[in-house]
Amino acid sequence: MQPFIVIRNYTQDDELKCQELVRDYIMSFSNKSFFVYCFREITLQFIVITWAIFFIFLGVPLLFCALTVPACIFCLFTGTYFSFYSKAMELMRTKPSQSLVAECYEPFIFRCSPKEASYQIFIENCPYDEAYKRKFRRRIVAAISVKNHHAVYNAAWIYRFAIDPNYPCQTIMDPMIKLVVQNCIGGGYASLECTISEWQESERDFYDDFGFVTRQIYHKKIIGSSLAVMKTQLTFGLRTDEALHKQN
Image (cartoon, rainbow, N blue to C red):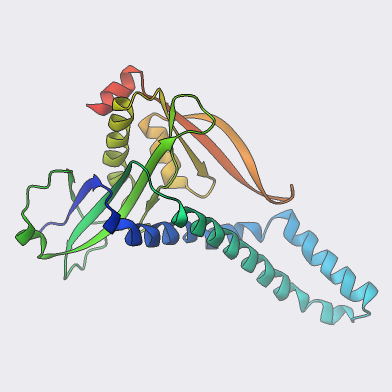
């Protein structure tokens, strides 16, 4: 039995699974960002200042001051983890609007890696009946929500996107974004906007190939100006020949 994925409208019954998906997706970037932050200038500054406080003001021997390095690394890891966790909780509590989900159907005994498997993709109308679907294990592997952009006139904004990192990103995103574009054109929007961070490399490659262009690049501050995350706002024109081609 070949596995398949159905792209369909979100229902209220999907909310708990979507929240778990959003949480796992956001948290999947925490370890990578932690290792990157370890080599940022602020980490070295934090270690040096801690050494100075213990050695100069508390009189701790220099050899024992070296023991503060693991403590500083642990503080960095804790701060990074909880910053991502806070963002995940924020998105989980956000009420979805105009949402789509990708529901994957796989055999109960499925030894192939999801990224190596070949999936049939169906939009809304799945040709299989419920009796056949019960032979498969179901799981939601991607979700996306769109609403009015608060700063760009007549623009739609992708604001609650998540995809299971174990599944092929572009294979799933392509039909979902095409359906989003189709719905936004039907809704009369002039452009589709999204914001991605420097950790979302696969998503950035997909958006570039799809036809999104960079509107602006900025740094979102986490701890002052020393620790920040680079963000990119992308835009896709919905009143162009390319948009009409994507719709078809």
